[in-house]
Image (cartoon, rainbow, N blue to C red; front, side):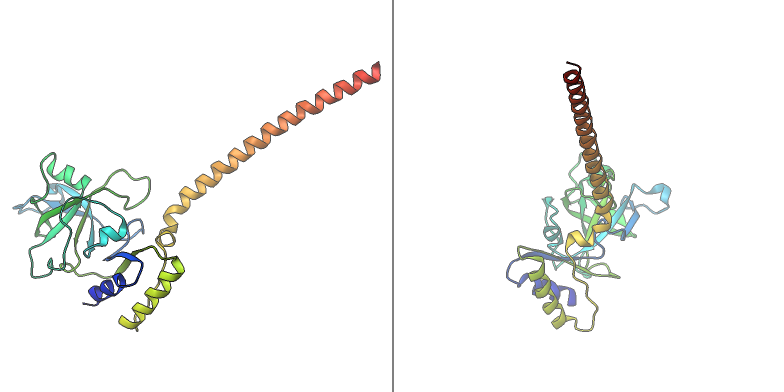
Length: 237
């Protein structure tokens, strides 16, 4: 109830385009990974019988929109996908290809944690562990159907970082006044992931500058030698 209240309050903030919750942000170094997936009816659910291993993200409706992840086909999650409704999931492209091949994925089923899930949508692939990874499987389940140990509220807004942070701070203080809250931009939250790429880019930039300096040194060196030869000739004459 508090999660939905936070989301509803967030989308009422002028300038907010979408808001949703997730258990852990992709690329944050946390989350549920390598969860085995089986065909419906599989009795022996040993790892040798799994079809694939996947990352699992319990999310709310509109999380994909807030995160900037496109839904390619099917429908989004809704608040009606709760604990009393059949289990449903949105899978990414890699999951769909590995599980169902060229067949239409929407409407098909799979076993996850011994529960039968129906695929209601397929989302585009993303980066989940690091920026250099090969495509991996991911599934978005309804947060209302799975308990969460943590909650991350993701908000997409046209406001400046300072404006949206202040608005969210006021909103959260009214809804969860005793809960510790940390508000960060998406870039700041994923700074550890982007650091190696930025460090590599900086190193390449430094190497480029060094090469340019060496080239300039070589040019000036030749100019100095040419100037010396001209002066000597003049003296000889």
